[in-house]
Image: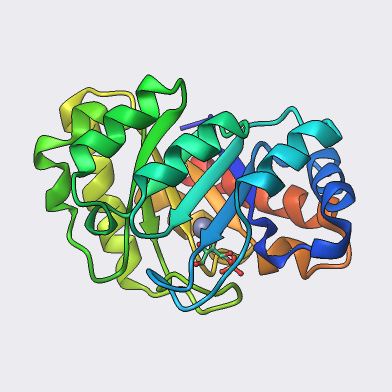
Length: 226
Ligand code: DX5
Ligand code: ZN
């Protein structure tokens, strides 16, 4: 597995200087921008919406924007984020009345689709939906806040998702989100993840480039040990 991608979560960026923060983290070697959308309904926090996504595009951000919707309902915001320049749009299946329709909507609007699984949510939603999914996102914390501790049972779920992807023969990325740091990213890669969200570990560090470089070194090491 060589195509590892690092996706800093801008939830931990300085919102007063968001454009500069995104430029800095991309300059430091990030592959994509993880954009956390919280509605104070599906999760107990309120963050940023499509206008901020569009503002980043207008600022000149060309990297993929990975929109993680922690909202209910989801369909209206899927449309708004597709118009605002999102590249990926992921949502929590239980937050949509009709997840099959929501996945189709994401693809029809020209974006890559994804389903997100909370620590307590089983993967069985994929049984009839995998064909419409471009990314599976395993939450390794309960959604709502940055800076939480990695929940170890996520490793088992990542392994299960990796088996499911490999057995299906489908091209689906496997992302993990929550509590990812330099010192656990290799274990998460060994479990089968290929895309790594990290918020506080990157934006909370003094030097974004050295943190991302250290993560890549760990990822290269995890590959060598396989
Ligand atoms: C949590 C968000 C995460 C969060 C990750 O609800 O989905 O993307 O920002 O932050 P860290 O890396 O600090 O756990
Ligand atoms: Zn997220």
